[in-house]
Image (cartoon, rainbow, N blue to C red; front, top):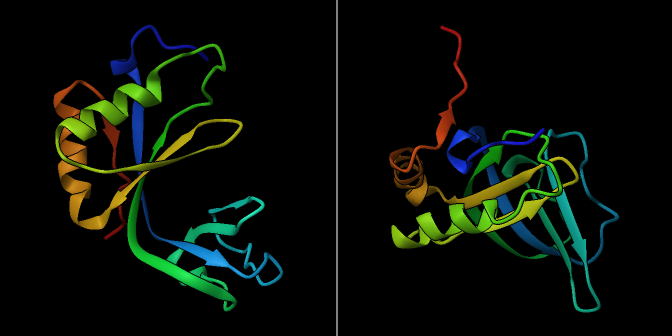
Length: 135
């Protein structure tokens, strides 16, 4: 699926709260949640997961992350989308980190900056999809 302009992209608010962790290994990951991102390098095992699913064998953690998902799937030929979103948020003084999957990108900000991030992106024409909660 391609988009004519970046502003046609929709960013979906994920309701979950996330934690970024460094783990001893991946042996105790709880994969029962909707979201779990892992990375292994020669120096570390990193996990980004729902805060309620943090594995017990972590050595470091940072709580309080919120997430926007770029609605996709995004075509691999599209260029600069993440860079433009990052630049908008950087201009607003909001730090991010991103995780890319085969289908799309996920943009994480600290919870205290999340509403400002949504406003900044909305002001630049990005559509923000916020889940409706039942009564």
